[in-house]
Length: 252
Image 1 (cartoon, rainbow, N blue to C red):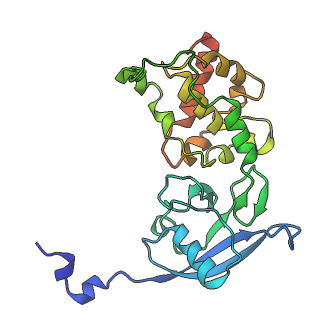
Image 2 (image 1 turned 90 degrees about the vertical axis):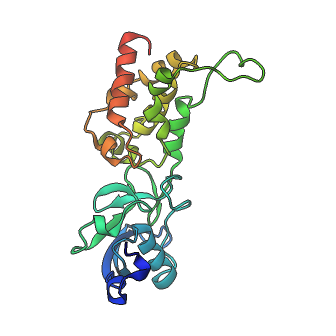
Image 3 (image 1 turned 30 degrees about the vertical axis):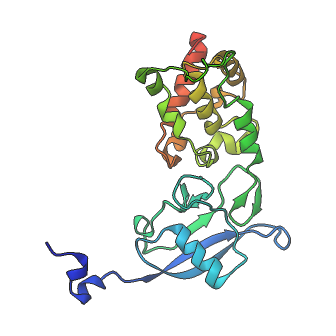
């Protein structure tokens, strides 16, 4: 079988770079009254990620470009942004998966206070997250040297919502969140779901009471924006519906 190392030089070099245009919504609170759009031409490969292109701009063209990133592997969730009008992680969005014949538009996620360029203030998001008690609530400790036992079926009940990386892509894609600063938002409800349906937890009713508030799950309009935006593939809308059902039943 022919390996890459054995292929003719011309064939190996068939993958070529090209110039992509990124149009980025910029904002510097020290100099700008309003955000503005700025375009950059960047030499990229089809297999490059948007994060790679942003790095090239920052390192080679404009060092003032500001954005968050950390692990660069879709785990930390820090580089969520709007790319061509959709919430995505810059580190997971490949250039080839976009329409490379058109400019690529990039802006900060919506619904949270804009701080600079692609960075928003995440504190309102985390405040909602903390308000649903996103931790195990149990009155007794497990036996010394042992764990709290749980069946495979019990784990599967909430397995999907354990995948949340708190990137805010789902919450900042929600039209209700954009217009209602009090709404908990999808991510907070997803993290409440993770513990509401955990058989080892004793605080389910506390969380259900919190989410039964007028700004809780009943503000959801089931537009499915959140499920589409989630980079981890969590069925966010389904999780919200399950919490609604648990409230109506009076138990998980």
